[in-house]
Amino acid sequence: MPEPARRDAIVVREAFSTNIDLKAVTELLLAYLSIPRSEGPEFDRTMAENDAQALYKAGEKRWGTDEGTFRRIFSERSRAHMAAVGSVYKHMYGNTLKKVSLFTLLLIRYYEHLFFFDVLRKAMKGLGTDDKTLIRVIVTRAEIDMQYIKVEYRNKYGKSLNDDVHSETSGHYRSFLLTLLGPDQ
Image (cartoon, rainbow, N blue to C red; front, side, top):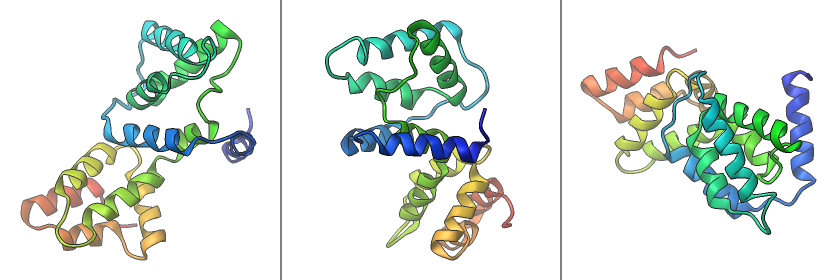
């Protein structure tokens, strides 16, 4: 198996050699960002088999693609579950999941933190704070990839996420969010 950087480069090269439906990518990203899911290592083998069958019926087996099925499965399932679905799909049908843009999958599964730092910035930018979004992203990403989000946030905006959260919140609410964010690096 190639090292992660080489693997990602291969996937990106393959993705750019295919047509990318930006509308479908946008809809998939919005669904993925708005739907809570377990990110633990557990998965249900039977459910993975059912999802593999549903993806086959929604893609390769039919004329055109049922994007709703792809969007639902790819946005609602964990990484571990999707890895199992990919394995089952390849075993059952001899192919990999090519009907969904490889580029989209790369972004979502390996670089999803790149989307969240923009979501956090928008939640705090301008007049007032979108507390619902701020809480949702910080709480759901705290134990998954918050450190990566914080690095990307600093790189893009030139100041720390902790500083912005500190300036946009107060009291116990501020303390709670800053505790979840952890110390600045």
